[in-house]
Image (cartoon, rainbow, N blue to C red; front, side):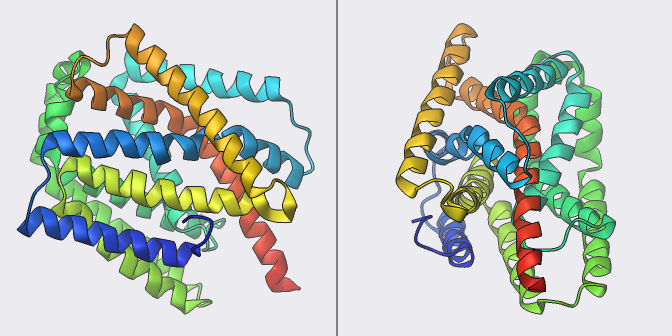
Length: 321
């Protein structure tokens, strides 16, 4: 399906599926936590991991487009080094690690959802970051009772109970400030960017629907919708278009490479999980999968940032011709 539908139609289809999930959860047959867990894990394996497992392919294309040399040794050395560094930060100073993860994820989610916009300027970056920030804030704070349960599963979470309680007491204030900043930065951005008004309308409708869906779904199912269904599928679609451009790689070879690197990533995660006794029950499994996603975000975000910069630069050249 990602090879057939346009990005716009793909997004519309994902939003329809999300709305159906939310309506079902509210009025008909709410999914049990076990069913939500299975959907989450299957989605991570089928879509979440593959969209990040091809970072090496994206990096080779980035180097080609930017006329730079590429070394597999340097790539893996740098990539794994960032993984280890961020993992150590999360384990040793979790409060700083979580804040840094939210900041990085906000940039990444904002840039992915708004890559068609001109976000290279300062106001564009603030617009993009505030979008990702408000999405993450809404997912976390509108389901904070469930988030607290996950955080208290860690010893570091219990050690920072005062900070968790503070966030719980002021979650409405934090969420309100996030929305206010987002709408202010959005207004400033669109005030000076009158081109392509249809993009602004499409973006606003999609944003409001995403907020409605995430609010009406439980934490795990809401995160599955946004990260697996929305973010990963849209990212994969953009990756397929980017890597297929200029006949850099055929679709068949690309799918083979995605499967190959995904299997390597899944094997590594399984070995890491077994060694750490992480698969004791569903709760610990979900927690450590989320931890793994957080660790992967740091190097993945930089690679995708370069890819989207190359896409925007090429599209700007087309508009000038």
